[in-house]
Length: 341
Image 1 (cartoon, helix red, strand yellow):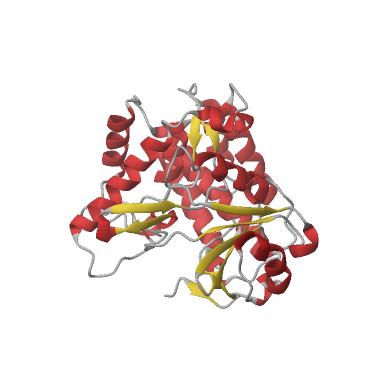
Image 2 (spheres, rainbow, N blue to C red):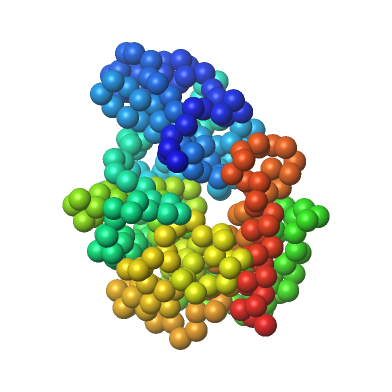
């Protein structure tokens, strides 16, 4: 399936307005061709293809207010600050806060060239290639968590991170509930009652998974990491738990395995337990019981999906990729419930 598609009608915009604003900043005169990236369940991502340069535009869904998951200024600031100290961040070009252009803030960045792998990978990839992907995923996260958090000092809210996360995601879930999903109250009560102390606060990504990586496997490396919209200063083990909510092992139950969106089941990929052990070894951190972080990660993913499902149910988006999200919410809530029972 092609990564790029024609722009959906509901996500279209006046490219001439954008070009007129952007052209002086990039020294391009001709209007670009525009395509939409198929991925992205939250913010919208487009490719502006100029004759000699590919530029990526990021914007929130039409009509969305600038909450943290859709705040373009925040997302632009995070990547601008991190780029000098963490090379895998894309290069930012410009932030536009003039709402007469698109009706919202948006920003532009250079396209990161390489390959993005999603649910399945080409048959041409070897087990060695898969191992490079796996090691990059683990080591890249450990390296990010070693970045001096002072680069994002205004995002550091200090002690109480775990409690704020549990309360915040619980509130979001209750606010987004629809009548066709489980209420999740048992899981929310358990998370509230079993909060560990934050071991430390560091820069976290918030959506660390394979399909946010751009790989150059010919050079055995990662070209870049995308989708920094949920990045902040927070607990590294909660970031790891959020990442592993997407990680489907080879022997997982069929319902959870049906949600797999990355090739975590392939030979050359670690199991969740191996992933955790490798991360702890690289980072020098300790964790004797990962249950809270795993349950939190599953619940947090549940909330993200439910928020999108609520928009889909209300007719605010017609993206067909979302039509199974209600079922996914129930699968994730049930899985979290089994871990604490």
